[in-house]
Amino acid sequence: MIIYNQAFDLYHAVYRMLQLLTNFDKSEYVELDRLRIWDFYLLFPSKIYDLKPKRNEKDFKARLKQFTVKKDNPYEKVYNDRKVFEKIKPYQTSALHCLASYGIIDKELLLLNRVSIISREILKDYANKFEELSPREKNIITILISDFYNIKMPGKDGLKARTNLIESKYDA
Image 1 (cartoon, rainbow, N blue to C red):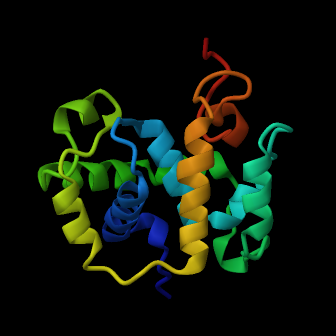
Image 2 (cartoon, rainbow, N blue to C red):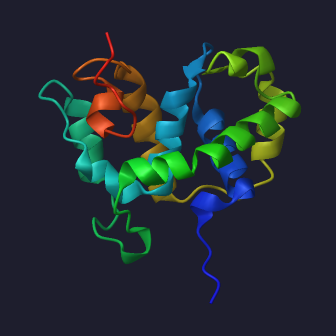
Image 3 (cartoon, rainbow, N blue to C red):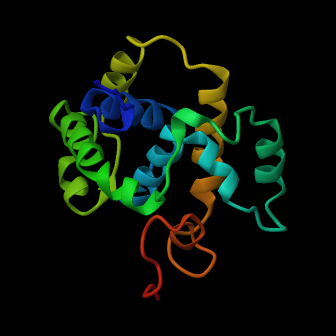
């Protein structure tokens, strides 16, 4: 029996990266690890409930309450988040190199583990070829790009420690 999993599909990884970058409207770069974390939660949106918002993150709490996804989706069972996160890394990296080859993101910054959009026109052209996102997908992307962008990466309360997808014990 053949089972399809979109996490291990290169073309779906390109699609997800295009969607994330299209909705990322900041003119600066985003860290590669942050983008990979966003992609993980776009793939497995029910895992976002594992993150507990801090007291001062009222917007994050409000968006989480509006978020309509089953907490226990049987098709999205992930038994070890960190292992799955590492297994999808080659697909994520290949997707980003593909976007760099199309001239959408900067190749030089990608080598420095940063992703910066250099051509919004080409990005929009590719993104317009897809159908509109569902409300659930729009909501998760909003949470990721707004709330997760404001959380610093390293440190005890950083995104790496809160998601526990990347080792953060030795961060300064």
